[in-house]
Length: 266
Figure 1 (cartoon, rainbow, N blue to C red):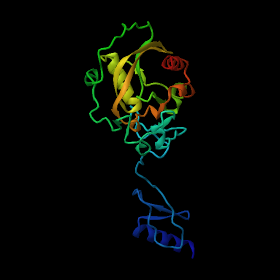
Figure 2 (cartoon, rainbow, N blue to C red; figure 1 turned 180 degrees about the vertical axis):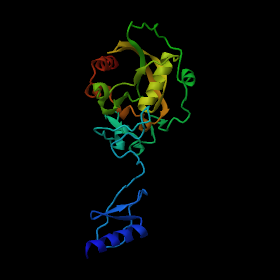
Figure 3 (cartoon, helix red, strand yellow; figure 1 turned 90 degrees about the vertical axis):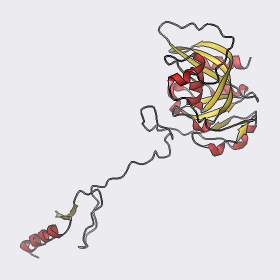
Figure 4 (cartoon, rainbow, N blue to C red; figure 1 turned 60 degrees about the horizontal axis):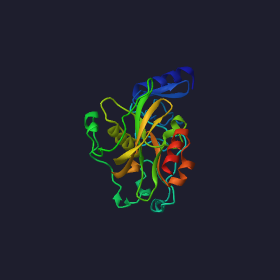
């Protein structure tokens, strides 16, 4: 075939199909699909391939962060067998949305998602679970944020801890705690943080301690679980564990939390 015949064939292809040959490569029209090239004895060439956004792959937290972004988990945690939850001497752990690793209830209280969660700071300020307790006046420290948290203990003695996603702040595990938001009572803030970090619905039972942390002064309350499901933990946690008091020192690693563990075990 001479040069003139080749040029005529190229013109013929261009006039009858959506695409043409360029330097021996099939070039397709921009149509978000794979070009369907007539069979001229050449291999099909993919071009302009577009795909729909995919769900977060394994290795991402099932919940997105406050900005709506996916949260990659660098080293996945593992849930423990279901029977660890009934053993008061065992550490029991659940990972996000792994409800199959959970029993239906523990110590007479069912695990079920908290459905009527407050949706505004105004609602959180009046959240159930706050109680009149004997607690000292809170003394803030100039230049430091105010926080509140909870030590949530089961009737079998074990204590709930959360494992921050990707060991944020260098924490292997910690007790639910967060910075106080404007307009929230300290007790309400502690209940809110407990839910967001552990998926649990708790009720304040008493004052535990005021602690000076790295950048904040935090009031800790004692609390009991009255509902919720730890497998629904928010994106800030990649696992939630129930730990015997004498094993807490093996789980937490921050010096302030170790001090809280010592007080728990007194």
